[in-house]
Each structure stands twice: as C-alpha cells, then as structure tokens.
Image (cartoon, rainbow, N blue to C red; front, side, top):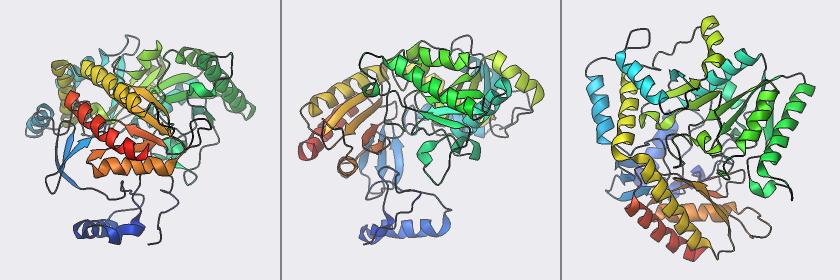
Length: 449
C-alpha cells in the first residue's frame, strides 16, 4: 500500500506506517482504527507491526496472547515494570490522602531530603513538577531570571520536551517545530569530530564559544547551556568523561548557567554514579529529572544551587497542582527504597559492562557497525553502509530493530539519521536478561550485520 506517513513523523525512528494497516492481524487493525478515530494529533506507534501489552514485571512485558517480551527500550519503569514495592506504596497512599504543596507534608520533606542527599552539597533546593518538559521549562525560566539573558545553547539533535518554550530548543522535533531565534546548536560530543592534535574538551569549548559569540552578535546574552548527559537523541555519546569541565567554564565566563538534563541519564542509568554529570567532575547550576523518578507515576524535579533560584522564588510565584502531591511523592520515595534495597547502581554497572562487551564481540567483524558506545544500561550501536565512510544506514537499522521485535525483544533507534540502535532497558535488567538479549542479537546480526 502507499505510505501515509505524515511530515511530522517521517523522521521518527522505528515508526509504524499507517499505510500498511490492512496487513496487520485483525484485532490490531480494529484497535488501531478505533484509536485513530478518538486520539488527537501527533500520536505515533512504533514497530512495523505494533504490539499491545497487558502486563509487565521487571524488564519483561506480556502481550495479550501471553508472550513474554524482553524490554530493552523503556526507561520510565526505572526499577522495573509493576515493581511490587512501588505499587504497594502508591496504593497505600491513594487510599489515605492526596494533598498538594500548599499543605504541610512531612513525607514530601522526607523525600526531598533523601533525593537531595544524592547530589553534591551545592545543589540543595528541589522543586517538583509532573514531567520532564515542565521541569526543563521551569529550569529555563529560572535561568533567564537569574542571568538576565535569553540565549539558549543545545546540541544539534537534542530533545528536551514538548511545551512551546522547551520545543523551541528541541531540534529533534523537526522543521514543524521551529527553533527560537535565541537558540544556537553545537555538536554532540562525538570524538570523531575532533581535529587532529586537539581534544574533545577543546572542540566542545570552541563550539560553545562560537555559539555564545553568535548569540551576542544578534543581541542575545547567554542564559543557559542545557545538555542531556547521555546525548540520547543525538545518537548516545557518553565518553570520554571530563570534557564538560571546559564547557562549563566557558558558559560561566559568559554569565550563563549550566543545566544538566538528567531525564535520560539520571538515576544511575550510566552506572558509574547516580547522576550523569558526576562522570565529568562538574557541578551544574540546575539539574532536571523526570520519567524514571516515580517509576511511571507523573513526577519530575528541578534541583538548584540556591543562589541561582532564591531571587526567582522571592519574585515569582510557582505552584504546580500535582507536582509534589502525596501520591507521586510516595512513588518517588518507593523508587529510592528499591535503589537502596536492591543495590540498583551496582546491578546497572555490572550488567551494562557485560551487555556492551557482548555487543562488541558480536559486531567486531561487521562492516556495518561503526561503533558500540554508551555507559551503564544506555547503549548505542551505530549502523552504517560502510565503516570507512560512516554513511548512515537507516533502513538496515530498522530491519535490525524489527527483527529483534519479531523475536520478542524491544529496542528502538536514535541519532540525527536514526541509524543508531537505542538499547535502554529498565534498570531491573539482570544477567539472565543480558544473556537472552545477546543470544538473540547474535542471531539477528548473523543475518543482517
């Protein structure tokens, strides 16, 4: 059938083409047709054959026919799908009361103290919202108020959220969501872009300096550099650690602040530390977090250096009806309990190392795999037409993704050309899951790579 992909989703990695709806099993066709009639614009299904899930546990999802899928894609259920400790905490709180931050809540204060204890002592103030988009929106509001600037610097294919403000500095949303005139783009930290004789730190410093100069030429003072510490949408670039020190120095010299977007890289996702920025030996001025914070409950947060946020707090009223309310706070506290009881960070470190080592071994002789990169349980496998030219191969990437889905393992794609496999499982991913993933990937690689 003729493709009916809209311009808005044409670049979206691993998306379902509604033009082939008639080729799907009858029950899927019916549900998708009903979905299309009632849901608003912009929704996207993934995989060539979408899949419906009715249950989950750990890093596993169960479809309506009882088939077990290994989830190596979803970071929102941070400590695992339907984790019993989180479910019990939420149900218990829901049966008691759900109040907001205009009332005294000892549980909220307890949670804030526990969460802040995972940060450097310079970061000591927490505001709570409902989504990563809201968190980044608030972070930029505070940055502008504190600096008096308007200029924003992000990486070339960054994604930071969907509010009108945040979409204006989320280039991955595409041409239908234009960037603000106050936004400048810099390279993601890809070591292959570094000129001979230079370093990644110097390359990134020059990128930031050039962006600041261009903003100033157009009448914009720098407000903030905001980066996802895993550079997830750019193609997953986590190494080498340390280059951010030079970048932050440049930002501060221009009077701006550094916002670390930890929605993707936080909560020990990168293994070596609780927060992605810690790998670089820097302390941000503002940190944002979201999705994994409540294991699926809508809760997000912004952590500030107090000197950055105090005047904003005195001058601007901020209230979020559900941000900081009792039920999502109970979920957030339960997630921290699981981190402590299950030693989640160590599990991520060990299984992430094993996963990347296995992928490198499987693909070491492939002419179509440029790199296996990442940290912890965030891994990218870049697929190309030729290792020498590094020409992206999106079609082959999507073949691999869908071959894995057909074998009941879920991954997706990322990067400016959507040619990097995105492997980002719940942190419940254990050694047995690693083995299943690698065995299946080896089968697919034998046929495709």
